[in-house]
Length: 277
Ligand code: PAF
Image (cartoon, rainbow, N blue to C red):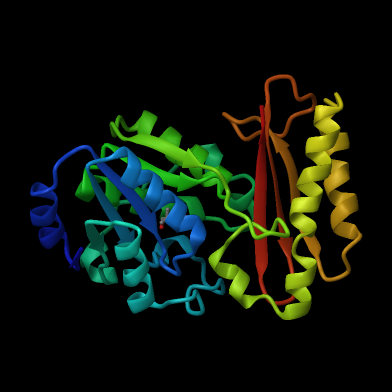
């Protein structure tokens, strides 16, 4: 596995890779969720490129950029074990050279849900993903379903800007008690960790109600609110049952939906989501 640190080294390494090329962009802190993306990329492509870059543009001042878990040697071992051929691990100036001014605005899709709580977050994600796609020129790129809004935004970005990358959205990997794997789980105290499966319980209640025929989106959102209210350490930031294309809140779920929620615990905030077919 080759580790490259700047744009020109990546371009040279990329030129030697047989296609198709699968790409797994990450912020590092690699866990079994990322490994499932890497394995899928390995199965479906002749070559696999991964990136390891904590992108400052997608964190607002006061968010957890500084304390985002970082372990480059451990991450590189995991990338190698999962079969990556090339890892792009740049510093900030290699991604955003001096004088950099361009950004990618994803419009209304970036203003709701995570975007309403973290303004500018998806501008940062879309900008770095566009740069990474330009450098790696992947045939396929792999994203986790857990960040459901991000996956929808990247699909739209690729379509709108004609980037010719197949976006592959892979199932959320969960702990045995249902908690979605996330790099931020390490911040949970033991007590919060015991409480955290409340997110997946809320989603399961929505799923059960939907399977039993409930189509009133407000009633489905109410189930999430009730479940989160039952856990004293958890406070709900949003509960959403939204259209999968526009991410606008639905009244009636008649063409599927993305159900998502964000919950704040004293030491960190967690998100989870569930697509309804
Ligand atoms: O989901 C992530 O890890 C990040 O948002 C991504 C896609 C690597 C962009 O920095």
